[in-house]
Length: 197
Image (spheres, rainbow, N blue to C red):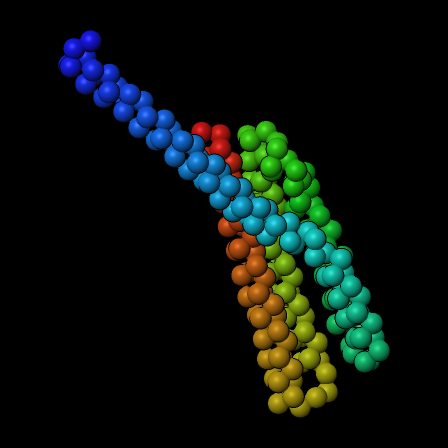
């Protein structure tokens, strides 16, 4: 073997070693990227199912609010409003989550899971719109009720403003929560598409 062949063999061997090192680094990077993607997916899935998992707490608060409004001798329409909202909202959350399962997001067919999540988003947005309309109707009904009472206009305005502020605050919190939930849903859909590619 002459010197030129020896140099070529050495270069080839060096290239093989470099290729093996690059492949090993690439494989490690792929594993790290996959782990980061799975961690982000788990975080988004937890956020997605937080609403469904918090239903029992919400029902307990609604029952407590009904009991307190009855014990405190509040107006009958306020107790009725809480009951109607509970009857509308809590089953609505279960309806929005119909067909959405945590294990299918991780292991299910990507196309059907993506379609299920899109259907969930539409239902959840409908639920949120219904909640906003309900709160608007509640504020209007409360205002009408207060105008029919024999109280001073100053006290009526204070109560009206308090009810309106409570409703606006509740809607702002719900908007913030819904925005994060829907963003998590979009992120899951994007990650599923990346997984498919």
